[in-house]
Image (tube, rainbow, N blue to C red; front, side, top):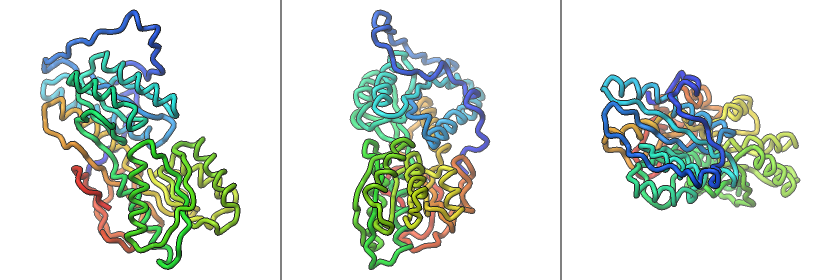
Length: 373
């Protein structure tokens, strides 16, 4: 099994410093740190800069927990081999445009500190472009996880199989409606990052591959609770009549749970909800036969842990895959008993209890390549 379990508290992970807010460039302009020479000694500690996106989205908190828990395991092996331990230097960007700007400054700050490697969860696929190119010129490897970085060269990219996530949602939706019925579909998206774009692509491709007629009647933007609540209210305003929409697909639970909460409060339980991430609240709705019918759940802890293990492999001079895809799990009324949560044990291979072009679900982490629905 590849998933981490029994995660310790965040404070027990060998973390250096604190989560930084916006960098005060004027305050440090006269005392800009020089880039120290990174030690090549075997027993010298290795500083791992970590750029986190949000601590308000539960799935991302679980990713951080998995990453930081894996330091204990990795450092035990490094000590046994006579190697210096990994020391994390974390920074949290935060949500919204302010978070994007903050993370750009945090990337420069970590490079100024002369860390040995950077693990980044980008807030925006383009925002860290300049930072990545600067890291390339400084020969500091960058491992991105959850979302990729446009421009420059990443040493590796670790992500959930996001196309698979959308595809699983789409094929399940298609299995629950007659082919001849043309579905009115609302999509709540977030086109700023690659993971959510891939989920939308997978969802639409699965409907088409299943021969399900559909029409995307409107799209909204939401990825966290505040924007999700607004999207839910906007959907109710734009489609006030019951039956005017058949399916609402949300790219994550961070915004999706608030969307579905507004719909349910308004009595719109005829809507078929399909979402992504595997938030415990969403899973409970599925078990209670609520408005959400499928949630393609991430193994969030493993996503962070794989990023950390990949960074360690790079520091050891080992070859790593340029892209690693962690599978997602389709939580439905039929499969919910098999799912053990974000940081639980991964289920064994099983046959999906609905029509699918790929009837067997596999737990294997894949090395790049074509999507694996």
